[in-house]
Amino acid sequence: MEIQVKAAVYLWNRFQYYTARNYVEQMRSGRRYESLSKAITIVIMDANLIHEDTAYHHCFHLYDKKHGLDYPDSMEIHILEIVKRYDDGDPVHQWLQFLAARTEEEFMSLAQNNPAMEEAWGVIKYLSGDEQERALAEAEERERLDRASLYDAGKAEGRAEGWKDGRAEGWKDGKAEVAQNLLHLGMPVTQIAEATGLSPAEIEALRKVQ
Image (cartoon, rainbow, N blue to C red; front, side):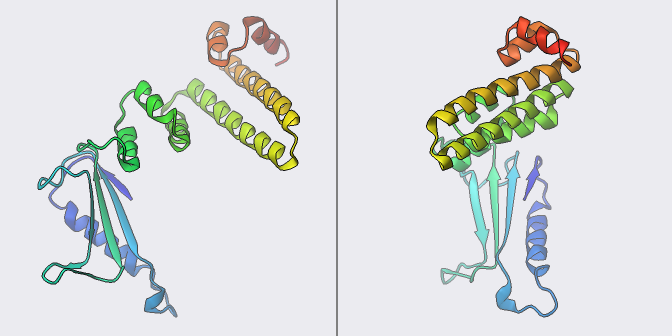
C-alpha cells in the first residue's frame, strides 16, 4: 500500500514491479506454486493519474481482452484517486474524504459517526500534535479503551448496575489523569477545565496531590 501525490509517468511500471515482487517473494524453498496467495497493491493518489474517465476507484488484474477471460487470481492493483470524489454513499469514498481532509472540523465531522475513523483521527492527532495535544490524545485513547473494557466486563458478568457505576468512575479517573498530565506540562487551569470538563477547584485539588 502506498500514497502518491504526483502522477509521474513511471508510476504504472512501479506499481506493476512491486506487485510482481510481492507475489514472487512469497516463494520459499520447499514451497509449492499452489501455496502462493494473491498479491494486492493499493495506491492512494492525491493527483489525477487516469484521465480516461471520472471513476475514483479502478482495479486492474491480468485479463484476456480479446476473449473476455480473467487470469486466475494472482495479482491485483487498486488505484484510488482522491481528486475524483462524487459518491458519498460508498465507504471507500468516505475514507478518501477522510484522507483528503485539511482541517480538524473536517476530520471530526467524518469521524463522529464512524468508530474506525474516530480511532484513525486519534492517531493523526497523536502523530501531528505537540506535546500537550499528544497528552490529550493518549488520555482520550486510554479512556476509550477503559470504556470498552468496562462495557465488556459488565456485559460478560451481566451486572448492568455495576457497569453503570464503573463507567462513571472510569470517566472520572480518566479526566483526572488528563488534568494531571496537562498541569505537568504547564497548561493554564482554565484551558484544562475546558478540555476535561472538570471545575477549576477540582483541578487545583489535583495540583496539590501531584
